[in-house]
Image (cartoon, rainbow, N blue to C red):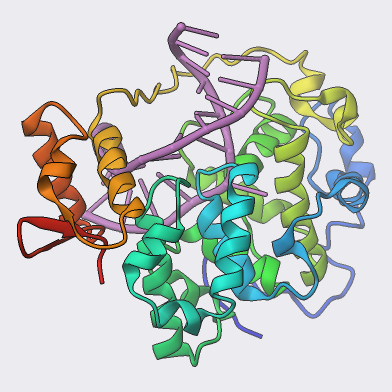
Amino acid sequence: MSDSPLPHTPARTPRSASSAPAARSASARSSAPAAPSASALHEPILDWYAENARTLPWREPDAGAWAVMVSEFMLQQTPVARVLPAYERWMQRWPKPADLAAEAPGEAVRAWDRLGYPRRALRLHAAAKAIVEEHGGVVPDDHAALLALPGVGTYTAAAIASFAYGQRHAVVDTNVRRVFARAITGSAQPTISPTAADLRLAISALPADESTAARWAIATMELGALICTARTPRCADCPIQSNCAWVLAGSPPYDGPPRKGQTYEGTDRQVRGRLLAVLRAAQGPVPKSELDACWPEQIQRERALDGLVADGLVDPVANNSYRLPA
DNA sequence: CAGTCGTGGCA
DNA sequence: TTGCCAAGACT
């Protein structure tokens, strides 16, 4: 029932047989192996999803919006396999936003375990508090309201609105960008970072019907996750193999600018990870001397610790000690 | 806008 | 072994 601007595509017109993406076929015969019209992809991908979707806890019919939201936070840059156990423990302990909101933020950081990017735990905790204080403890169904929550960007807002509430949004993550890059654009990989063109393409490809659009969103993501993978796509098992612009072009290799390789050894991120691991394992405050044992170089160690404090992931306390935020 | 922010598995 | 990658957000 909510209308929101961006990823929410323009309002559906009353529904006469006008620009609905179903009633066109003759026009697609003119040029030879051009990019497939998106509507030609709807049926095969939706059918494929119906048969091949993974069973995941946050997809259960009774999972609820909080489950979707927690999973989306955890899945930001972290693979499903590593999320699953942490997700189960999290939902067991904090089945509702209010349960998490009542906890100390440090407990969220601790329960985050080794999912990585622990600021997400802090933001999820802050989002839970905002949901309690501003939305009566219910995950909002409005895209703009979701977007206003800490840690919720364009993708996550659209994902929650679509997956949890069945709304019609362009849900554009790295999987979807890759599927469209190959199937529609014909390139081996999507652009390095999301572009406005990605969003426009995803919006134009969205089925007109709301519930169909919601299934389409999760289906295209799943296709990217299981079949149209980054490294070795399983094109032989792909439902749109015969429609894919990239395959039809002979699956040319990636020719764009080099992707940035993210080194980790020796970075502040590694040091932060070590420091936080010690604090997660401890129940109470940890003397700084114990943290000092984490990393040999003092300058970098101090910088990392200061950064954690600045981020709110660590609290300095008495006796030259540190702890997870209370 | 480019940089920053964890962690671990796999080709 | 090592580089690449995994449902991004924020500054």
